[in-house]
Length: 342
Image (cartoon, rainbow, N blue to C red; front, side, top):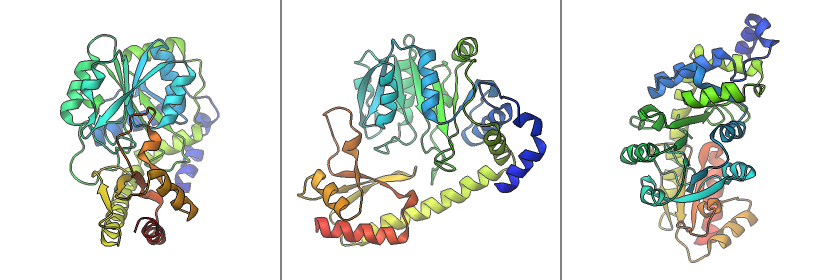
C-alpha cells in the first residue's frame, strides 16, 4: 500500500490539491463500477456512484433525497444504529420479522411501508440469505406505487462456496433499488470509504439539490483506493482473505463441535460472511450466560440484543464474529463456556 501511496503522490499532484466532485473522485467511481461488473455482473454508470466517509453519511444524503414523510421497514432483528439515523429525521419506522429465507414478505405486504431497508446477501444479525424467489417478490412489491428498496450488500465479498445469488440491484429492471456497500469489511474497519448507487431520478435530484456538499473522503484516500483496485491488488486481497477466513471459520466450528460443548451447542452458518450463529442449550437464562461470560473476560452478543421490539424469536443464540479470533482465543472461549454451561 505504501508503494501505491507514493505512486499517487507522484502522479496525481494537481488532483490532490483541488476539491473533488461532491460525488467523489471519478477515477474511484470508475474503478468501483468495473469491480461490480467483474464480480457482481452489475452494469453501473460511474456517474450514479456517490462516495462517502462511511454509510452513515450516505444515509443522511439518501433520507434527504427520498423525503422524511416516508415509512421505512427494517429487518427484525437488525443493526440498531441505522434505525437511529432515520430516527433523527423523525421518520416512521416499522420492523419486519426474519424467516429462514429472509424478510417476511407476507408481513411486509400488510404494512404501509414506502421503503424497505435490508441486507439480502448476509443479514445482520441472523445471517439469513434472501431467497431468489423472495427477491423477485420484493421487486414486485416495490413496483406498486412510489416505493424503493435500499440494498446494503453487507459481507457480499466473502462467499466461500458456489456462485453468489444475484444482488437485487442486478435483477432490478424497474428502477427501484438503491445499492450501498462499504470497504470497511473487505479491507479494514478504519478505512471509512463507502458508496451508493443512485437511481437516475434520484441522481438528478442530488445534482440539483445536494451537490453543494463537499465530498467527505480525502482525495489521497480515493486515488490510493482507485490504484489499489485498478492494479488488481483488491481482487488478490479478496481471494487471499476468502481463503484465510474460510479456514479460520471451518477450524473454529470444528473445534467447537469436537469440544466438550458439542452436545450443548448448535451452529447455524451459511457459506457467506464473517460471522455465524451459535445457540446454547442450557437451563441458564440468556442474560446469566452473558453475565458469567463477561465476568470471565468473554463478551458475548446475543441476537436478541438487536431486536427493536418485544417479539424476540431467538433465545440463547449468539453472534460469533470470527474475523479477529485467534487460536488462543478459541481455547479460551471453549474453556469459559464449558465452565458456565457444563
